[in-house]
Length: 296
Ligand code: BEZ
Ligand code: FE
Image (tube, rainbow, N blue to C red; front, side):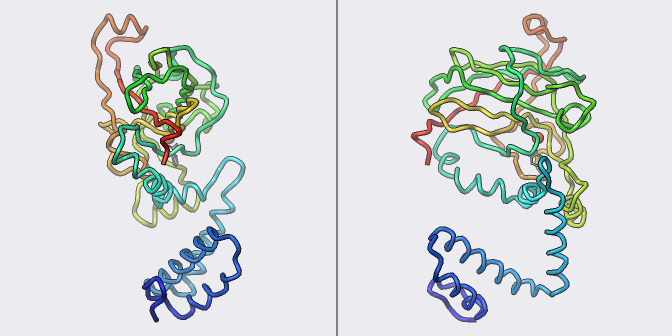
């Protein structure tokens, strides 16, 4: 072991491997590979990784690759369950979180599907049973100005914990839809209160969670993908405050600011106005978008 220019102690082997990068013309690639090699070597040294253990690791990565196809992406699931996906978000949005009122981001997840139907303000996207819920609020910018005509895509699981795209028994377009914000930035749609569900566990990532004594559950949530010209795309989700997994999301997507209360609305007039049974759950939540030119 000896000191390098960056003052971190590295094994002589690490230095030999790093020296092979001297001809790399891509500065960013060189930076990334230098750090990767250093960390991987330091990791092997720290845990005194054996040949057998690394062979098991390689087998795990091989199975992870084999599980991937046009729809299933086991490497993203691995990244999600190791907290790497949400870590990237934390690194690049640190500035926003501390210094702005902008709505925080969360994971897009693998179940987003393009081509949702356009729905009118207040439409009901639930074609299967559940506890009726109204989601409503406004899209505004950081100065409170309304953001009209933004595209709002929403999707959530049915009561059986499956998204429409996972479950051939669900009607087409169940629990997903595409809305536009109104002239004052307002949006509203009717749906059901979501349920918690497990991330896919029939692959190596599921086996990893089991071996680690971790559960595979995501707390109940509704996904939102919000796009408006001149604003950063907002990929986020709203989580139910009363969910048993809200503090232990398998993919670390929950942020306290995204946890909402499903308030029981007992107003018969409201139920009538929204054509919902009484009582219903009322989730009122604004989304604050960031202007693109203010992006870090
Ligand atoms: C989801 O919320 O749909 C999701 C996110 C990450 C991994 C698996 C599912
Ligand atoms: Fe989800």
